[in-house]
Length: 387
Image (cartoon, rainbow, N blue to C red):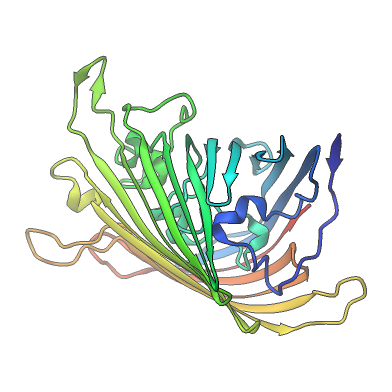
């Protein structure tokens, strides 16, 4: 039996699906409403852009970013299947983000295998656009943590309930990032470039990545601690060693809270350690970090017919990324290559699963040696909705 769910369901909560735990994000999506058969759902996202960089602008443009399709099927009482197929910018890029099986032994132990999202930070698993009040994804979650990161592997997750707290865990072995972490067109160490075109075919070095997250949740909010570590370079070819083994490690902490219904907070910070070839540490960067904090407050709850949960929100995002943390050996001066950004905005949710948003983005970029910051400002107006 095929159940096609095309209507946006109303759920409790003002700004998003606040009650959904980060580790439950896969199953918190609104299209899952059936206990048998297969459910189909998804989300779409579009926006406009107008940016000026140091007085120069490319003008106004419109962008249809994503159209994602979800499939969910409860195969049996203990086995679930879920997948996500993403279309970016029309059909410019088509990617299978998730395709996994969960086998629930009990709530404290669920075996997961397939194409999954490693649980580093909160955003990689909880990245659906309708959940967020801002058009752009957080810099730390896309530049330091290479979200969205999909890898094939297996592991386990579960939750233990000790009132008033819920403790949860996730632990996975997956194919890791590849040589592009250092060998890329960015001219710096750049973890997102480590995603491999043949990621689902096998590992480039035969050494799986290890990732995990521990979290504690209370009525007020949730805090999580996570990591991702892997040997990323191709160090062996046909049994012969061709390079030293080089490891990358990401450590992250995340926090989400709804304070009394009048303030929603979301934040994430990550630090990355990357073993790079000798002599490249100062230029490429062997240590990187980033952080963001979103603060959202409801301004007005209009009385609209058929939209009982409609709300107008105001928000502010503060974020920073440092691609090269350290000092030059020769001079002792600080290495820069960093971005700082402020993003005020407003958003309107006629229902919790649909958002219209307008942001003003202002960010400052300083190059490797710390020359005067390149200033960029712009306005983005967009929408996102589950279906």
